[in-house]
Length: 351
Image (cartoon, rainbow, N blue to C red; front, side):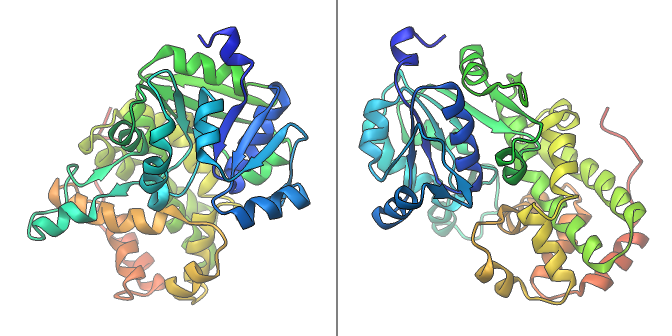
C-alpha cells in the first residue's frame, strides 16, 4: 500500500484529453490535490484561465502544469493518459524524473509500433517483436516497476456527467490494484482488479476495431440485430487474435472485454464508433481524422492487426474488411454484404 506520506502527495495525470480530465476530476474528489499535465504552455494557460478541459469543468483541487519534472518529483502515483502515438515520446521526457518507487497506471488503449525496427528489415513480417502495449513502453523507457492500466466501459462524457460506470485496474502487483482502488473508487465509479495486465490491455486495444465496424452498421441503418451480430462476431475475432498476441481468453469475457466492447460499439460518444458511422455516410478516412479533436485509436489498430493476423495465421475477417474500406479497396456497403456471406467459424470455439 501507499504510505501515509505518499497519500499526502498530489496525484499526477499526464494528458488533458477527455478521459484524462475525467480521471483527474474523480481523483480530485477523493484526494487533496491533482497535477494535470497539458502538452504545451499555451494549452496549460488556456485550461488554467477557463478552468475547463475537454469541455469539462475542473475540480478546484486540480492544478494545471506543463512541467513533467514537477509531476515526477511531486507525485508518487501517476496516470499517463495520452494517445499511443505520443506515449513513448512522453515517457522519454518523463523518465528522467521517475524512480522505482513510482506507480504508473496508464489509460491508453492503443499499440506502440516500432517503426525503426521495421526499417532495419522491412521484409520481416510484422510481429509481437515490433509492437508494444503501453505497460511495456513504460517498462522499456523508465525504471518504474509497479505498472498498471485502466480499461473498461469508460466513456469520458458519461463519467464527467457523474453517471454510473466501472473500470478494471490490471497489474502484476496487487499493491497497484489496491492503490488505484483507493484513489478512484466512488459510489458511482466501481473499480475491479485483474492480474492479467497484457490481456486487459489487449481487450482495450482490440475492441476499438469492432467499434469502428459497429459504427458503419449504424451509418448504413442496418438495425440492431445486425449490430448485435457484428459485435458478437467481433468478440470472437478479438479473442482469437488476442490470445495469439499473449492475452488470456478469460479477460475478454469480463468488464474490460465485453463491457468495453458493448459501450464503445453502441454509442455516438465513442470516437471509434463515430469514425465508422461517418465512413458509412460517405466521408473519407482522411477527412474524418482531420476533423476530429481527439485520436480514434481504432484506425491505427486496424492497420497493425491486419498485418499481425497474417504473421500469426489468425483469420480476422472483420479487421481485414475494415482495412480494405479504409484503403478504399471496398465500399462500406459491399463490405457488409461480403461479411454476411463469409463462412465464419463455430459460434464459440475458444472456451
